Length: 434
Ligand SMILES: CC(=O)N[C@H]1[C@@H](OP(=O)(O)OP(=O)(O)OC[C@H]2O[C@@H](n3ccc(=O)[nH]c3=O)[C@H](O)[C@@H]2O)O[C@H](CO)[C@@H](O)[C@@H]1O
Ligand SMILES: C=C(OP(=O)(O)O)C(=O)O
Image 1 (cartoon, rainbow, N blue to C red):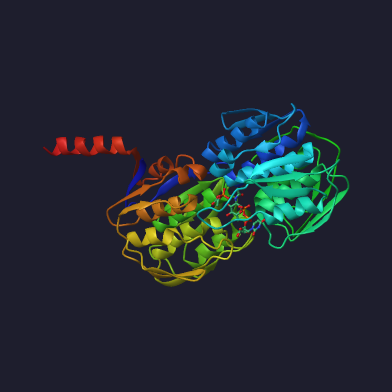
Image 2 (image 1 turned 180 degrees about the vertical axis):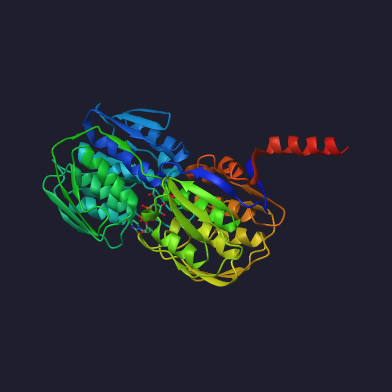
């Protein structure tokens, strides 16, 4: 088992570079399947386990995929298979994003049912509702979802019950090759949706309105491979913003796009954190004392649920009582128990948590319950008294490249070990003391 070991008490300073966005690159790679002609070249791709997984899914589907030097090349011009099996979908729910592309290109797609995960039940009914509106027959059975259409998908008017990111992306991809015009209403407005629409348009699609509440897609007959640079990861940027603020540090987050981070910056400013926009990023200056604030997660441009646990770490360190309300996922408070192991004064009340700060945080052995919780526990370790050991790092590796090394370069006292290596370090320390 691998662990991150962090000792609290250092102020962070210097600069850190943000990677390409995980949540943008996964749908973009899924969209490359739409091209029956030509290669796609995707740049600024982060070396994350989720990227390796989506590449494996595409290879299984018979696309030719290479990944080196942060560049993914996909040639999907060969005959493709229609099925994404459970072994991939289990590893990463976003595998379900190949469904729209396969259905549009082949008229059929068979994808293992994703099931729930640590943050909620996460159904995909809105994705399927969209495919059905476009003329597909959808069947669920034997652990698979199968969608099929005779001839081509047909343009349709689709209203999403909730602005789901994945449903917006899957339906948008399917609609690019449909016959006629598709209008999707109440869509997600996340920057990653805009990035996907930009990529689809480079492939020859006609997508308008991404970033607003209504997207209009005029179907075309064929799409081609295209080149694309992925946008910077706003959640990774936000995580380093919290790292700077929690330690009272001064850090330049290179590549952070302030317009993608409006709600987070506003909340952190309310807490007393200062920001300076610089040419290549955003400087974050943490105050000596942070003020308590209330937060409610919402679809973009509201406060992102993917920053909820990192913000919890920051609020534990603030003066006074705060409330965080999670409205996007019904079960995204699994990390609360782990924070309690670090002496956090925090309680769950329905869909909210109440935090009393500043908690006298103590180092402890804690286990990551999901990707963002992993980062949040490390952030808490940066200010806890003593040593914190964070395990279950498979979650962290889904979304952060070299997290501990980036923090160490900013001055954090942090290492990552396998259990065997840790035992060696401890015994070497005993030898030195002997
Ligand atoms: C790979 C990726 O981009 N992941 C992001 C994406 O996940 P994902 O695309 O799965 O998130 P959605 O926006 O679809 O889900 C939001 C909410 O809608 C519900 N829902 C969704 C679809 C559906 O058909 N039916 C339904 O009820 C979900 O259960 C959840 O409660 O957006 C989330 C919300 O910003 C982020 O936390 C994830 O990091
Ligand atoms: C929840 C997340 O991702 P996913 O949708 O891939 O599980 C996340 O990035 O925080």
